[in-house]
Image (cartoon, rainbow, N blue to C red; front, side):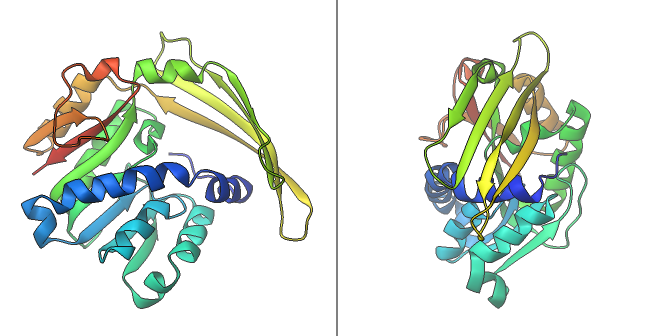
Length: 251
């Protein structure tokens, strides 16, 4: 799995917190409405990035362990969670989502912003599912880009909306293979006023949803379905027709 560098992590922290802010309240509301959510307030934020989703759960009384492969992302996560990290309510661990072990058991394991699409193969995804199952006593909720959704990567976009950063996204996906890529380049302003150039190539692997569901069931999840973020309790009838789906699994 990719581990993002310092400059890209700075851009991510300042420019891309919005997705976590949109989905965190909806995931929390769904989880809190379940019997498990009423009894277990321990959350694992898998591929936690800069900790934006973790903040929402922490502010609502949950304890959070965040796991990410990028040390620079984890530094921002610790900074963003401030007093929660200092008190021990939040803890952040450097590890690979495809191969990790933890001593805690969590009522909710959550991963957002299509992080699991970054796993390089179906075998690595299955390994991730096994690791999550070992530490879960409740729900596993994550979002995934579908083949249809990744077709939107096939373009170039420029974001010059602020003085702090210039971001150029160049995406490519032919719709036929199983890998999409996006080259993200640009400049980010440092605290001293100078600008630092950054470049990251981000890969998304296409995972066929029926195989995702079968893999989750095979490693021990008892119920698995695909939903939209606005209604995590209702299964979608044609998930492959969506650009992004949320996978809801429970023990």
